[in-house]
Length: 255
Image (cartoon, rainbow, N blue to C red; front, side):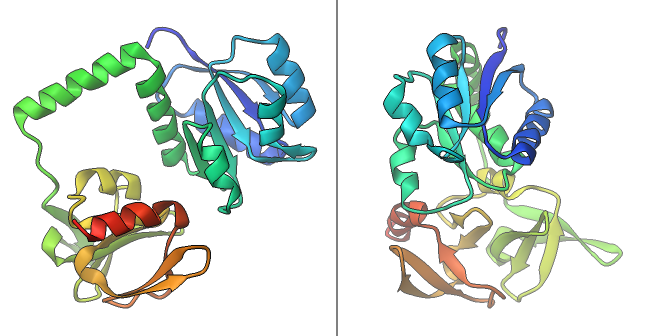
């Protein structure tokens, strides 16, 4: 990727904007933050006179309105990654206009994946490289992860995929839970785990949880068109399928 990605940050919370800047500075991509905006009015003014933006990082709810108001006042033909603290009905409308949307507090791995998605779609150089990697992977043969090496006390043990019920994140760590209810911390992020394991047997039901098909013991309808699950071994908190993943979840159950 020879040209930097020129990003405009639209965020009315100073700390959130600084967090985005810090995360972006640590990403392995050539990125230039060309400016920051804090309101609907200032963003509309900026976009009318500055066409060089490649990508917008845009908070949904701003101090003087919604980002949707910006879309109604300016013909934005640039990709957008939305950020929000609210996982509610507004997301469906915003998703139609965006590369991705991320829930606050922004996770660095998820932002990296969103930027990677932008590059894959809008940057031909990166797309060609990605296609080449896919071809090489296909030639060499790809195999899903079959086991995890975890620490147990002073020992290292191998846990086979068939012996794992689910994965979840808590306090910045990714945990693996076996069929016997034993919990182990692993080094990989849940995003990495999701890419490495067989999607026929595991499904990402929300931001923080990957579950196996065999771990589901009971499923009930929940409000806002979601589902609440009972798992085995029992999980300490409510296990809820997020609304944006319900359709895929039901399709996965029927495969």
